[in-house]
Length: 223
Image 1 (tube, one colour):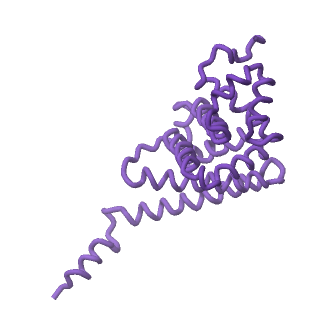
Image 2 (cartoon, helix red, strand yellow; image 1 turned 120 degrees about the vertical axis):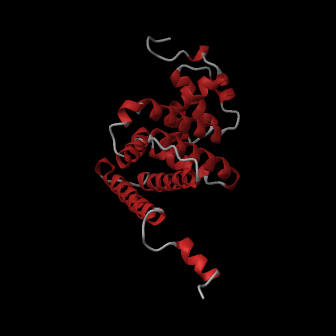
Image 3 (cartoon, helix red, strand yellow; image 1 turned 90 degrees about the horizontal axis):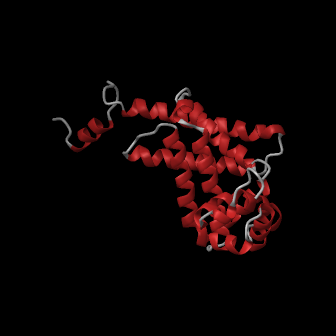
């Protein structure tokens, strides 16, 4: 083993699954998410190809999910509480999504192929779970503690923003992915405006129109 290089031989299959994932993604640029890409990645990294195959028994989706999990873990490590605490909520979300985009920069073809595989009907349910998990990681890092319906709506909205941004990212030829980041900023601004409007609408202290009171009057009109 080269000094500083991972010792794949001493890893469990779960550890190998995550450690080798970035190498597999790099190989997927040329060979797709295939066994050939996995073997090439293992050989280039100095891991045993036969053992590496055991780490991804589900084939392409196992490799793709491991890559996403690897990015999730790297994101968590890059944003400790003391760093995130200095940011406003909008900056937190933007920084977390930007980190993920930077993590796949240069791997657009691997991402494009991964997206196509995840969109297959047989993989849709697993793809949704994987995307939800990433959105959950981002919101938890951002400090979200909601347990009501907001817990679910926030993750669904962020997941849709992230997915849409990735679709722009893979086709973006602008310098420094400027178009992608502009798209991301517009999406986040739209959500922020919606959240502010929703907060005013749901504020029980406000003395304006009340949906509950209005519906009550429809059911029990004054005489």
